[in-house]
Length: 148
Image (tube, rainbow, N blue to C red):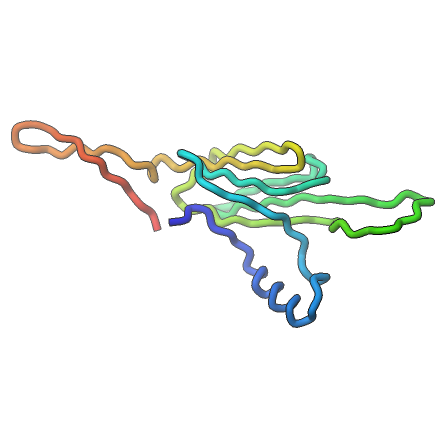
């Protein structure tokens, strides 16, 4: 069961449009991501090379995490630009956070062009012991909850 879901309602439409036209010029800039679970948290890394950390914005609304950033380079007067291939502009990525994640306790850091988010697993989603009353005493058994 995945607790972290990618959410971009226009990505499939953009991909089909790009394939129909035969170029990638119409695609909105995005940035690559790795996500994995480590212990009681999900870790997400976003590659944002050359991005000013002050331009990065993280917003959580309901269960949707939105990451935006900007990368700009303007040639100075007199520059003779030989190549201008790096994508410039605003970048945006959305992730749908499952109910089993604690979106109120997300932490973020930016180092060497990589934005790292740590999203803790919610206490309600962690396995816990439940005591069962038995004739002659108590016995603990392990139980877990799952949210779909």
